[in-house]
Image 1: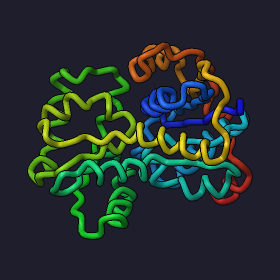
Image 2: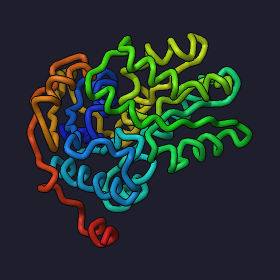
Image 3: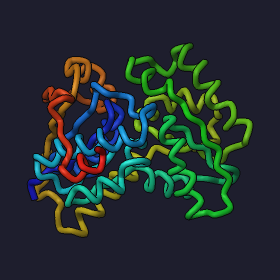
Image 4: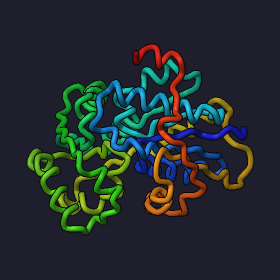
Amino acid sequence: MDRPIGIFDSGLGGLTVVRAVRRRLPAERIVYFGDTARVPYGIKSARTVTRFAAEACGLLARYDPKCIVAACNTASATALPALAEWFDLPVLGVIEPGVEQALAACPGGPVGVIATEATVASGAYRRALERRAPRIAVVERACPLLVPIVEEGRLPQDPIVRAVLAEYLAPLAEAGVGTVVLGCTHYPLLKGAMAAVLGPDVPLVDSAEAVAEQVAGLLRADGGLADGRADGGWRFFVSDNPDRFREVGGRFLGAPAEPVTLVPAETLSAPPAAVEEQT
C-alpha cells in the first residue's frame, strides 16, 4: 500500500519519531510537518495547541495517509481525543507508548517525567501511569528551556545545557526516581547530558521506538504495510524557515532533511468541525 504515514510536531523534535519509524519500517513513505513558525507548543493553551494540531493534521490529510502520529507530547496530551473525532483515520500519540516502556524499565522508586509546561499541566502522563500502576509515585518537572536549547543546536557538553539540566533534574534526583520519561521529542538529543546528571542507573525512556512499533502493529493488523523492500522516502513541510530546518533537522535524522517545502502558517486550515468547536 503506497499511502504514506503522516507525522507532525511543533518543530524539529518529531524527527526523532521519523527516524525511529524509518528504521523500523524502511519501505514506508513518510510525510512530516513541523510547525516551525509557532514552536514551541508547550507554553501555549490547550485550546491553541488543539487548533494548531488540527491544522497540522489537515495538511497531512491532503496526502491520504494511512495514519497520523502526533509526535508532540503537548499535542498528544491535549488534542488527541479531538483529532480522533475530527479525522477519519487513526491518530496516534506518544504518551501511551512511553508510559508502557517506562513501567517496563522502572527497577523501583518513583517514575520521573520531564516535559513542557503544557504537558505537565495536562496531567496526561500522571493519569496514564496511575491507570496502569495505581500506587506508583510520579515526580513531574516542567522544562520550558529545553526545546529552544535543542533547536538552537547547543550540544550536550555546552556549560549552559549542563547548568539548565542540573537545575531541572535536581528534584528528580532528590526523589530517587527509578526511571525518567523524556516527555518531549526534543529531549533525546540531550540524553547524554541528562545521564551525566542522573547517573547511569536511571533509565531514560524515549518513546520514539515504542511509537514506531505501535505504528508497525497497526499497519500489520490492517494489512496496510508497504510492499517491497525499497526505501520509501520522506517529504518534509514546515511553516517557517526551511533553510534552518535543513540545517538542524539533519542532526535529528542522522541524514539530510530533504526535500523541504514551506507552507506558511496562515495558509493552514482545520476541518470544519474543528473550526466550529474553536469559535
